[in-house]
Image (cartoon, rainbow, N blue to C red; front, side, top):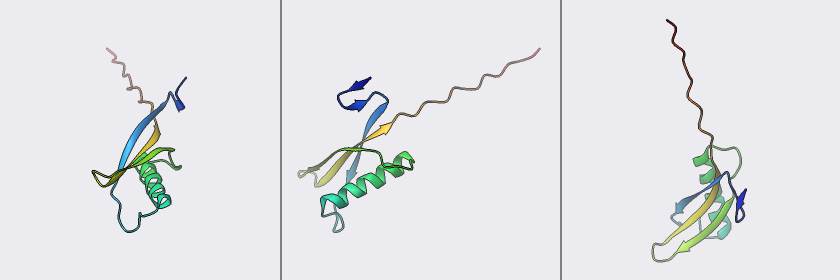
Length: 82
């Protein structure tokens, strides 16, 4: 099942990017967003960046990316004898 164009198993997360002299172009901002999202999610591939917006009143960029929800491991059940 999907909601809009986001798969049901996906979760949206955001990163705040403070621009500096190296992040003056859109491509470099996108590269930073992809690298940080991959690092945060401990993934081998880049999570999809869904939005990248500049907020002039704050002077920062916000990147919204799609992260897969991780299945929680079931607790191990131990039996007691006796």
